[in-house]
Length: 399
Ligand SMILES: Cc1cc2nc3c(=O)[nH]c(=O)nc-3n(C[C@H](O)[C@H](O)[C@H](O)COP(=O)(O)O)c2cc1C
Image 1: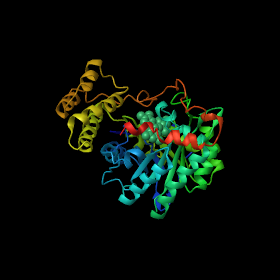
Image 2 (image 1 turned 45 degrees about the horizontal axis):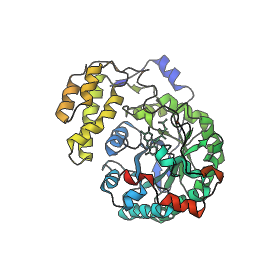
Image 3 (image 1 turned 90 degrees about the vertical axis):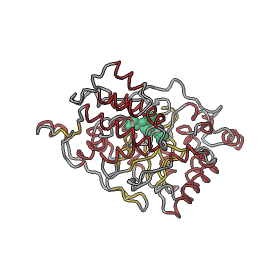
Image 4 (image 1 turned 60 degrees about the vertical axis):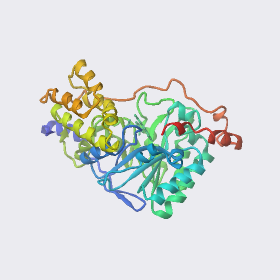
């Protein structure tokens, strides 16, 4: 499926050569600091495996697991902690607001030997999370942020497990948090930070502000992964060029396009080769993805095929596939039905480059930022605030 482009296109694409150096996260060497950014409902091991097979020797992070669910020994949370044997660096992301619960969950992960690296989620903009002070709302409270990072690092450090933090720029343009959060993360022993350069209010709308990434790179001595709006390998190169970031993290740009990691691998090698799979090849990837998901769901074919629906919509984006075929995919209940739909695709239809490489997935602004009452009044938490927050973790019911 590889398309080798002409010399002209190659020189247009290559621009100034971009170099990224191998990156050490504590004892773990990441030969190519390219990260699959954690995405809930997306970056389970089947999808990570597909990305990893295409991509460089980078970091492929699992979707967030809530600390409280782990501590409660919730089976669905446990499932999210599984890795494929091929995953050499097992990167797990934890979410939590209560430092004690986060510490317990971390201890569990470390004692069970479930991960080689832990990322902490301080980037989630979803109202049901931020209204309880979690995700991207949390770094506003510097004491709580520090406490959480401190406890997780204290458990991980003796076990040689590096900790990283994933943050946003702030809550809105008047309430920025990334500089303090970056410094605290660094002082508390994080091995790196990832900056999604949007505020909570910006949600997924507009464009990630890469200048913020440059500013954080300059301010910190630990590596910064830049994140936001990498839709093509060229975007990844441009982010490194513009910001000097040590690595890049790719989220929505790989939804239905795990081969973007191959493109980035090629680009970093100075090659203009880009993967442009025809529809037949995409169909084979869909079939494989579905089968891996059946394993993920312990043989539950219907769960896997239902889960595939969103992926199929992403895989087919840009291809001239009619509404009836798309609807048929969306009503599949079994692998046989899915295979039937795949067989009915025009196998030779070429890759719709230029359409498929555009923004995909979530792209809107927040309607309103939801925060706990009085959250912005002070940068630290009162004991009443902590009490109210910790009894009320919204993610309890999720997993
Ligand atoms: C569907 C979806 C789920 C996400 N889940 C998580 C998550 O579990 N943890 C996290 O830190 N970020 C999560 N994110 C944010 C992404 O990791 C990433 O920071 C964001 O999409 C911006 O990068 P992009 O422009 O490359 O998509 C999610 C994003 C999307 C679209």
